[in-house]
Length: 463
Image (cartoon, rainbow, N blue to C red; front, top):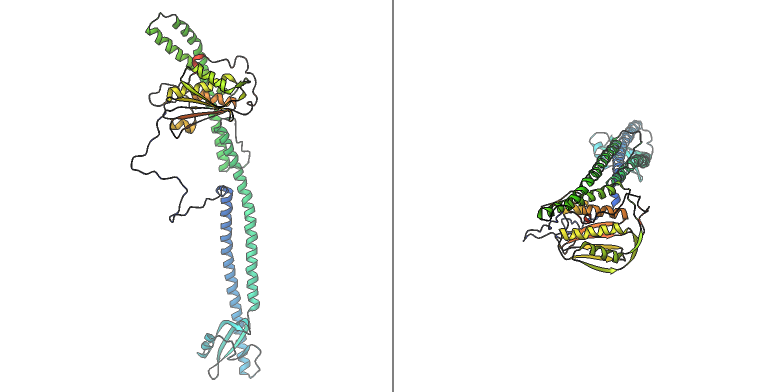
C-alpha cells in the first residue's frame, strides 16, 4: 500500500513535551503498583472499607446505648441513696461514708442547684475516683449530698469497647477471607476468558473457554458468548480460506491455457498488453495459492545450512534492483532457503515499489537479523498497528496487499519475527529476526504441497 507521510503540527503551535503527569503545584503524581489495578485488590479494599464502616457504626451505637443505660442506672442509684440519706439525716442518724453536708468534692454546679431548692445528679470525683454525685437542699442554705462510685461501671464500659473492637476485627477478617475466596473464583474465570481471547487473537481459533461451572452469572454469559464468537469466526475464516483456495485452483488451469495462447499472438503492442495482464493474473493466482497453504497451518520447512549474507546477496541479485547490501557480521544458520529468499525478495521489491531509493539491506549475523530500509514516506498507520492485510490498498495503488502478507506468513512458518516501523529520520524499516534454532517440528515438506512458486510471484503486489 502507499505509505502516507506523517502529519506535521501547524507552524507556531508548540508541541507539549512528553513527561509524567503533574499536579497543580508541579509535583509528580506517584505511580501506583500494577497489582492495585486488579479486581481482587479493589474488592478487598471495598470489603474492608465497608466492614470497617459497619463495625464503627455498630460499635458507636452499642457504646452509646450501653453508656447511657449505665449512666441512667448510676444516677437512679445515687438519687435512691440520697433519699435514704435525707431520711437518716432528719432522723438524726449518723451518715455513712460518702454522705454529708457540703462534702468536699461536690461539683459546684450541683451545689448551686441544691441551694436553689432542687435535687439533681452530676458526675465528678470522690477521693480520686470517678463518682456520681446526688445532692439536695438542707437547712441553713447548705446542701446534703451523696457520692456513688462509678469506677466499676467505667471498667464495664471499657471492657465492652474492647469486646466490640475484637469482634469487629474477627468479623472483618472472616468477611475478607470469604470475600477473597468468592472474588478469586470470579477473577480466575475472568483471567481464563481473557487468556482464551488472547489466544484467539493470536490465531488459535480452536481455543475455547468451556466454563463448566454450574453458575449462570455474567462471567459464564461472557464465556459462552466468547466461545460462540470464536466458533462463528472460525467457520467464516475456514469458508474464506476454502473459497480462496478453490478460486486459485480453478483459475490455474485456464490461466495456463491463456499463457500458452498469449505466446502464440503475433508480435505487437496488443500482444504485449495481453501477455502482461496474463502474467499479472498468473502471479496473483500463485500468491493466492501460497496464502491458502499458509492459512492451513500445515506448512513444514526444509532445513539446510546456509550463509546468511551470501543468501541475501543472491536474493538481491535475483530481484534485479539497485539495492545496497551492508554486512555487519556474517553467520551460518539452518533455515529454509526458498522461504527466506521469498521473504527478503518481497521486502526488497516492496521497498522499491512503494518506498524510495536508496534501499539498503543490512545483514547482522550476531542478531541473526536482516533489515530492509528505504527513504520513502513510511508505512501506513494501519499496517503498523495491525500488520499487513491482504487486498487492502490506499490512494491510487493498484496492488493487492499480498506481498507483505506472504512475507509475514512465511516468517511465521520459519519461527522468525517480522516487524515494521517508520524511522525517525524518515523512511520505512522491515526487520526479519531469525530463530537461534530450527523451527519446532521442521521436516521436509509433504509431496505435492510446497513446490517452488512461479518466478513472477516473487514480487509483492502491494502494501
